[in-house]
Length: 434
Image: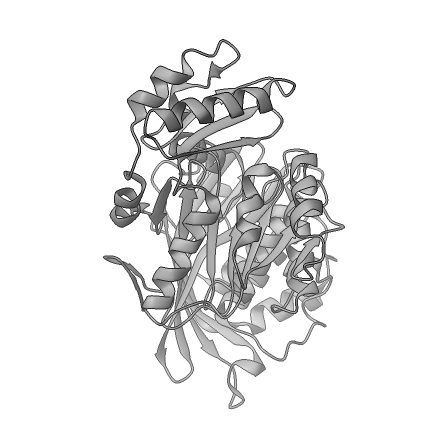
């Protein structure tokens, strides 16, 4: 397993095959995509093909408060590492444990009180919300036409006061004052150096962004980069001036998360076919499958069935039954136990009941642990969005490989057990099928 400071990430036992480091707003998350389809496509790709041996890092300008708010609004995955407040805070795992070593580095030649004192002398600067003011980040709004003049003067004044700071302007209005050692790029460098020291440097790293505060991500040596198609003028200008001839940085044709998927394919970093782009799972045969893919496939078919997007035919029902052991059990969050075959039979009566409605299903934190030569214990969070209600079950499944050919022959579900994630219980449990 990887040791980062005192933090363990149990799902990784060696150097990550791929580490994706992505900005959130307008990069991973498309605020102009009400159905969140590009994000859901990425989610399915990551959980089915990468979660078991790769690292997902979110690098956002948002404070912890606004980051957690975004997670409640959008179907986002849980990252292995979170870099927040424009690279001034690094945390690990779902519990978001902070990196104390990074804090010590940022404290050098930094005095927040002096920054507040000097910036108060600029009427052009408007303090952002209190939630965005952090120990190593002071954030303002400033008009685009005045930004350059203000930044030059402010930088000079803070230098005279003995501080070594960095000013980052992004989004055409946001100005962040940080310690010189901070920023998304420095945070990524710190992280890569830490992984290298522990002998677990990722085989490949892909940085993804759309705005000025992401430029530093693309300056790190040996890192691939993608500017999504909707990248802002300030980032495109930086690229034209600093990295135009660099073949490892591309301007994607696709927006947001779809652009990230495009970059995975462009740089040959691994599979870039999301299960959501597969029309027929029965006909689709893969050379390399894993329990994560089986879980994603199962719940994606369930979503399509309820939405009436899969054909209502016995072939699919027979295929589902064939993927379940005849004695396989399903324990509902309420404690009720049924056979999986009973659950599949009940599903037949729900075909298309969510057609034309806001209904999506996705899985997060898929972690499979071998318990035998052909047996896995798979844990994951199963999310279901129905209208405005979002529900989640912490799920544990036992899955066996079919036949003597191992996983290449597919899997058989042996048992499934669910319990509600606190705060995300379903109000009407009578229509909770899987």
